[in-house]
Amino acid sequence: MNYEQPLSQHWQLSPGGSGITQGADDIGLCIRNILSTRKGSDVLRPEFGSGHFDYLDTPEDVFVPNAVRETVLAIQTWEKRAVVEDVRFDGHAPHMHMTVVWRIADDVAGEIYQTQIFAGQTP
Image (cartoon, rainbow, N blue to C red; front, side, top):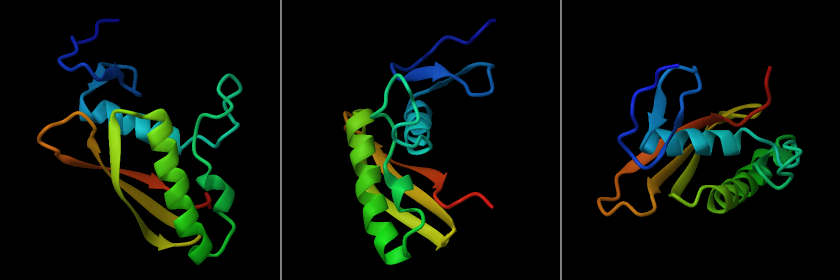
């Protein structure tokens, strides 16, 4: 296949299979992959992913602080290129959306990005 040339040091193949994802979009995609993977579900990397799934069936006052902790810990562990600024939740259990506000770690300008993840149980 013919892919365009990367213009950034941060890039990977696009999820759709055509072209590449690069720059901040690449980091956002990595964050989405980390937070969409339950710890222990990747056989070759059993520690990869996030532990926030363990709190899905708990009350919101238990879920939110533990999910924030597990989210920040997972991104600090697996995506060193990003620094988490904030983790926000919209909606109510079991249909919650999590928004991770982050910036590129080595970026001087400090532009802020957001990655949204469905944090609740699937209907």
